[in-house]
Length: 220
Image (cartoon, rainbow, N blue to C red):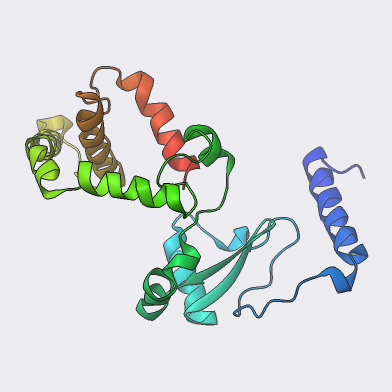
């Protein structure tokens, strides 16, 4: 019986991965003292265990394997902390070891070779950029100067929710969700940076909203 092309391709990838792992010299493999975690599948790793709500999937895994879990996504390993103590360990005690983000194509091509502060590696450039952000963007005076923008966008969101809930026969149940808050945040940012709102029907929304959401998704 002839296999479907997609299944045949997947089986070939699995077989190639198994062969390469078998042929790789044992002496050249570095052995790490990793925390417990589910056994990964060839090629895909543990992607099969992550559902539509990743934080809930990881929470379920932490109940089985503990507050520190080792996962594998494709060829990448990840160690996930799922408690306040682990968060403090990563973000405060050993923060300098975990400042850098993984290098990805999205980070390279959308931030001019990792020039953005959120993507650049820790070092002199990052420290200088952080000082500029602290004094020119996030100082109390600068934040207060854009208070009217945040207030306008919150009022716009509330008006939209009220209109949807009081539309008579066309009224729909109102659920404040991630899309509403994402639109609110992006409109605040674009008004601060560009002087106009680009999302949720504003001028240029059709041209900016799709690429903006794709960039946010690819950047994690």
